[in-house]
Every structure is written in structure tokens, then in C-alpha cells.
Length: 171
Image (cartoon, rainbow, N blue to C red):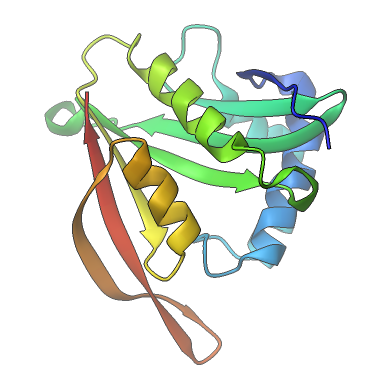
């Protein structure tokens, strides 16, 4: 497939595309996201658009487009409390199947890190990744993240438990 992507922050006009892509990720990888597919369907696109912030917001979602297709996305949320305002969290990383194998995940992470570096006062990016997801773990390690712990049984899906690894990048 196409390896030329337009990577940019999403706007409210992208809400329906984001809703569809996000829910595809929730359905395909239930162990990779804290939200369930059913919970994702229940959130209308216009409510998800609140994550997009504005041009100068500390919270944002970055999307990679191939033409009109949202090929992948990831988001960032800054902590809101004063004592933890120096850090934020990567959320909702997903690349649709047709665009995998083109380093799109890395392009999204690099774009997110570059945007975070422009935000005043941010010193650290955190994330969680399902401990058994070797591909995602390798991506984050290659981008400079370091592991700082594993939460056992962080998610329970049906009768199965999944561990989450905590990772951090100092800016």
C-alpha cells in the first residue's frame, strides 16, 4: 500500500473517521486497550472529538492519512493536577491492518513526541503496553522509552488476565 502519509493533529471534522478507526482497534485488539469495543461504540464521535483540543491544546490526537483514509492514530493527554502537570500519557495507538509494516506506528510516535516537546513544562511521557505485545514494546523501546514496571492482571477479559507494562520517556 501507499507509504506516503499526511500526519497531522485531528480536528472535529475527523471525529467520525477517528470513531471508526478507534473502534476497529478496540475490536481487533481487546487486550491492548482499557476500553472495550462495546464501550467504544457507546461514545458518540462528537464526544471523542473533545480529545482533539485545539491548535494550542496540551491534549491532542495525531492521525496518519493515506488520502481520505485514517490509517493510524495515537493520542496524548497531559496530567491535570499541579504536582503531575510535568507529564502526560500516550493513549489509543492503533494502525489499521492495510497499513502495517510501513513503520507508520513509529512515524506516529515520533510526531507525537515532537509535538509534546513544543508544550511548555512537559518533562515526561508515560504509556502502558500489554506486556505480551512484543511488536508494540519494541516500537516504544526503539523510540527511547524505558520500562519501569509491570502491573500483573491489569486487564481482565472474560476469564483471561493481561499484564500491562509501564514505560516512560524523559524529554
